Image 1 (cartoon, protein in one colour):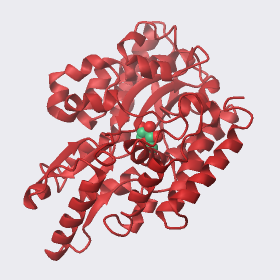
Image 2 (cartoon, protein in one colour):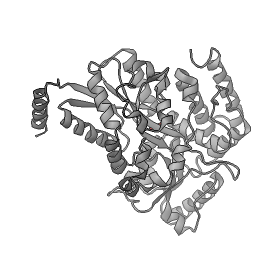
Image 3 (cartoon, helix red, strand yellow):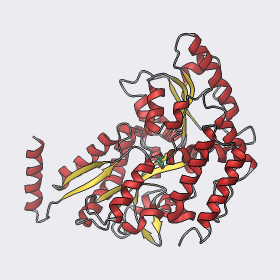
Image 4 (cartoon, rainbow, N blue to C red):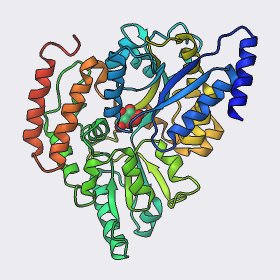
Length: 420
Ligand code: GLC
C-alpha cells in the first residue's frame, strides 16, 4: 500500500517536471521521538513525491556527536539532514549549508536567540526544531498523600524525597526512590550539573566573556548537595542514566521526583502510563533561599549537510519540519516545545501540554551552556565538566579539589584561545 502511494506520488511529482529524490534524515529516538519524526517526514514525502530514509541515532547526545563527527569528517553523503543539538552549531557548523536565503520568510517566526545561536560566522547553519529546558517532574499524588508542598529549594526537595521514599518503602514498595535524573558521564550530566551550579549562583562554567568561573564556593556547594543524594534519595544506578533510564524508573511509578526535558510529559500522561493523571511539572528548585530557579536550555535544530547530493530538496524538508504546522503537531503529539513564540498562545497546544504556556518564563530565562563562547572547543569543555562532576558524584573526589583540577584543565584547553 505504502509503496503504491509512493509510486503514485512519484508519478505525480514527475508529471509536474520536478525530479523526485531519495534523501535521508537523522532523527533521535528518545521515547516516541522516532515515531513522531517519521510521521512528519512521511507527510512531507507524500506531499512532494520524494522518499526519505530515517537514520536513527544513539540516545546519548555525546555518542551521537561522535557519530556525526565521523560521518562529516569523512565528507559522507549518507545523511542529508542532521538533527543537531543546540550546543553543536559551533562544533559542526562548517559542514552545513547556509539556510539564510532559503529560510528568509521563516526566520522571523522563531525565537531570535535561537536563530542567533544557530548563526556561525554569519551563516545560518540550522533551523530551530524544538526547544528544551530542564523541568522537575513531580508525583503530585504523593505530595498530597504526605502533605508536602512543592519543593522550592534543593534542600526542600531532598527532605521531601526522603520522607516519601521512606513512606513508600514502608508501605511495601521496596524499589522506590526519591529523585532520579541524568547522571551518566555525557552531555546530559553537563545539563543537570549546570542547573545545580547556576541555581546556587555559581555561574555557567565559562562566562560569556570566555573567563573560566567554575572553581568557586557556590559551585562547590552545588556539587556537594548533589553528591549527597547518591545512594540516599537517588539510586547509585543514576550515575549511568541518560534521559530514558530516568524516565523508565519514574514512569514505572518508582520515584517521587524526576528531572527531565519536556518530551517526558506526553509519555508520562500517555494512555498506557501507570502514573497518568498523577504527575505535575514545576521549575527546578532554587539553590537555597537566596538561589534561583535554573533550567538548562536545550533543544534540537535541523541542518543540511554540505556533502548532500540533494541540498535543495533536503532544505525543503527542513523548512517543512521546522514550520508552524509541524511544530504544532509535534507539540500536541509529543510535548515538544515549539521554537515559534506565536504557538505558545495556541489553545490546542495548551490543552495537550499545559506547562508549555504556564512555564514560558522557564524557557525564556533558561541558562545557556557556554557553547557559543567556546566554539569548537565546547565538547572538550563539557567533557571535562561532566567527567569531573561524575567523579564527585561517585565519591572518587571531593568537590573542592575536583573543581580546582577542572579549572586547570580548562585553562589548558583555553591556552591558545577558545576558538582557533
Ligand atoms: C536533549 C537536549 C539537548 C541536550 C541533551 C543532553 O536532547 O535537547 O540540548 O544536550 O538532551 O542529553
